[in-house]
Image (cartoon, rainbow, N blue to C red; front, top):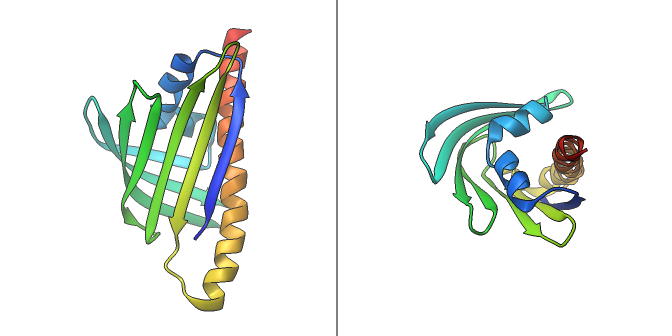
Length: 147
């Protein structure tokens, strides 16, 4: 089961970071390998269809995004798609002069045996790169706007 944890310090307010990451469309604008289609949206959640392209492979799934503005957290719960499971979360931690953005991803492919081991190894490595690229794109976007 691939598990990825990435973090970055950003010279921006925790609220500004949260407002950027809370909208999945913003993430897709920053990271072109992700396509987002919003199915349903309410104040505290959103249902989206996601397509992630990794090299020659693409993965699609539907997820529920739950917003917790008090905790500066967005949780992503898997509904259906190409994985057996997919759960992720963004967490923003306020610090004195900057904030920390954490991205946690857990997924299960549904493969078994040696195929699962090999696939999970490469998928973990690639998802780590994706997570790092996403949080660094958020950092670059916000630090540019802060000057």
